[in-house]
Amino acid sequence: MATLMLALVPLLTAVLAMPVAHASVPALPDSQRLSPVRAALESVIAQADSGDLPADVLVTKVREGLAKGIPAEKILAAVRSLAEGLGKADRLVRASGRGKGSAALLRTMAEGEAAGVDLELTRTMTQSNASESHLVRAVDALTELTLRGYPRRQTAEVVKQVLLSDPMAVPRVVAGLEELRTTAGLSRIDAVDTLGRSLSGGAASLESALTLSLDTAPGRATGAAAKSNTHESARQENSATSRRFRERGGRR
Image (cartoon, rainbow, N blue to C red; front, side, top):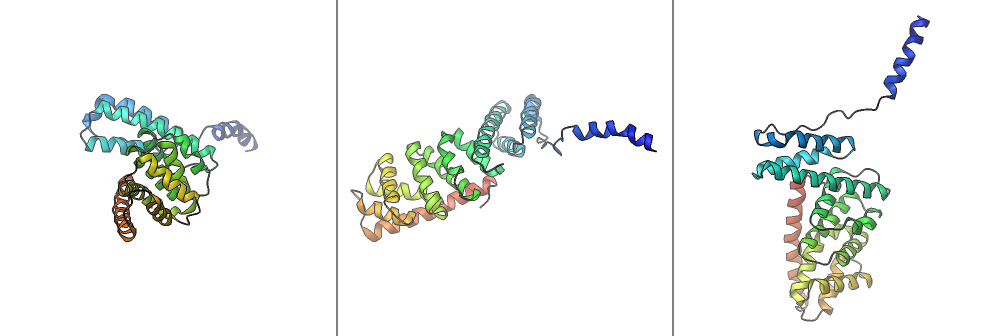
C-alpha cells in the first residue's frame, strides 16, 4: 500500500501543477451567417476568456450584430475591436487598485473608447472611492457627451467632479450641460467651463451648480423658467440613460 501511494505522488503533483482551465467558453449562436468567420470569432473569444476578460460580452456583440443584419465580416471586426478595448479597460481598472472590473464596467469603458473617449481621462475616476455602478454611469455620461461634440478633457474633469461630489446626479450631467448650453447660448466648451467653475466654486450639488451657471451665464433664461426647463430635460435624459443601461445589461 505504501509503495502504491509513493508511486502516485509524482502523478498527483503533476495534476496539481496543471493550469486550471475556465469551466467553459461562451458558445457562439448557431447561425449559418457566421460560417465564414466562425473559426476567427471562436479564436478571439477563447483568447479573451483565457485572459480573464468577459467573453460573454463578445458573444452578446455577435448576437447584436446578427439581430441588426450586419455582415459577418463586420461583426468579426467589431468583436476584435471590442476585445481589444476590453483588454485596455481591464488593465486600467486593475492598475487603479480596484481589482477585476465587472463586465458592465469593462464594456462601458471599451465602448467609450470606440466612441472617442481617451480612457486615460477616466483613470482618476477609477482610482476614486466611487462605487462601480456610479463609475459605469460616469463613463457612460462621458461617452455620450463626447459623441455630442463636447471637449474631452474638460468634460472628463466635470464628470469626475460630479462623480466625487454628487454621484447620484451623474445621470443628469448630459441633460444639464445641454440645457445650460442651449438656454444661455453658449458653445460646448464654454458650457463645460461654466459648469466646471460653478462646481469648483463650492456648489454643493450638480443642481446648485447648474442653477448658479444659468444665473451667471450671459443670455440665460430667467429664474423659474430656466430651472423648470433644466429639470424636464434632466428627466428625459435620465429615462434615456436608464434604457441604455438595460439594453447593455449594466447594473443600476
